[in-house]
Amino acid sequence: MEVNRIFSAEQIEVHPELPGMLKEYTKAVIRENPKDLLAFSAEYFRKKADIPGEPVPGSQESNNKPEDA
Image (cartoon, rainbow, N blue to C red; front, side):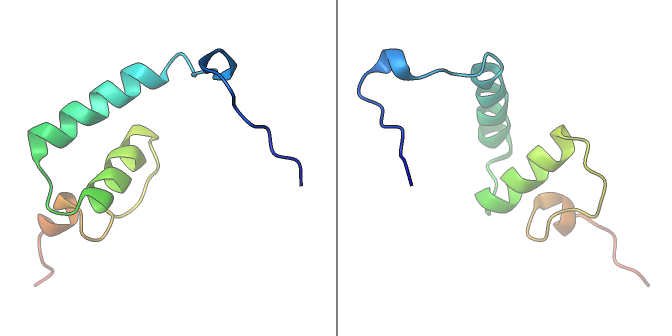
């Protein structure tokens, strides 16, 4: 298996949307200060990608979900 090694910064290509996306995500993490960062992150990007479904277990959205009576 061939591995493309990076020897200098000039070899790194950053997707043009990545800096803005990371900035928005970082602000959301700081604002929400989640207990479970991985669950928060999964739910954050699930919503950003418009993927339908139940909230990710452990995320704040799943913790705020009303219980079925």
